[in-house]
Length: 115
View 1: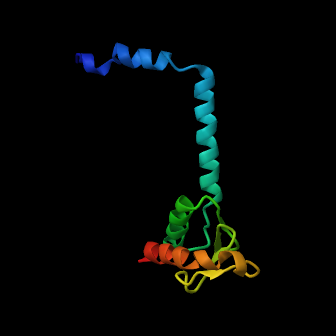
View 2 (view 1 turned 135 degrees about the vertical axis):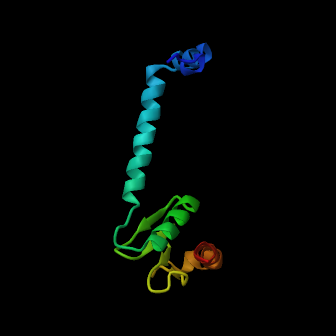
């Protein structure tokens, strides 16, 4: 069996690989590792797939989205999303003064992501 010339990398591919410094590659590797660790931290094996998907969507929209306990999570450290009605977002107790204005917007985003 003969190998075609397309089985071998082109010279432009080899040149592209050579142009990367080891520090750039190390930096990219460290970034990928941090992203993988962040993804693992955001997994909650105690909730259904739908609720995990909701959390994933919210964490992409809001950088500060964390699991509070087994079933509920916080958005921006002010908005609480909890069972049984995940679409009924509440303001975290003690944050009413600063968070009231954003509640309709956050609620709509959560509701839209669910339905």
